[in-house]
Length: 173
Picture 1 (cartoon, rainbow, N blue to C red):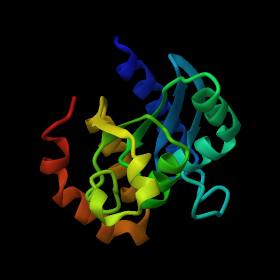
Picture 2 (tube, rainbow, N blue to C red):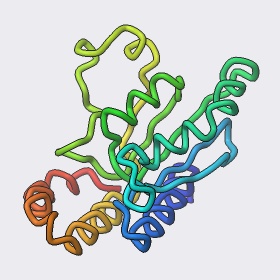
Picture 3 (cartoon, rainbow, N blue to C red):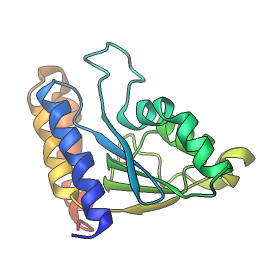
């Protein structure tokens, strides 16, 4: 098992815990250098806070470590997440100068990783991370579908995500 696979597996375990807690099943892992620093999961339903996304919370809770690693130690910081980040999380990633973003599952409805860089401000452009799709696409997608299936108010969104299934899974690792 390579490092990308290992760290994404940690994020996937967090996503499973989020699902068990009736939150959107998205997990994330923060790596500085080659060390796992912390992990997190969506808790927006548990905490009744719309911005309590796995990526956002993880970065904010570790902001001092990230800043020190980049500015004082010259280390790369990587974030692994089971779902392509939304615009809010991507902004937090850029502002914290995260070097690498690796996500498992594309999000054709609210994902922002494929944003046109010419449409965002210079500070975001200059700090935009290297982005790649990683391991466990199918598993992450299935957790998300499982969550949507459990909630009557998510039926329309469930249909939309299911309609994108083939496109989402075509590059799965």
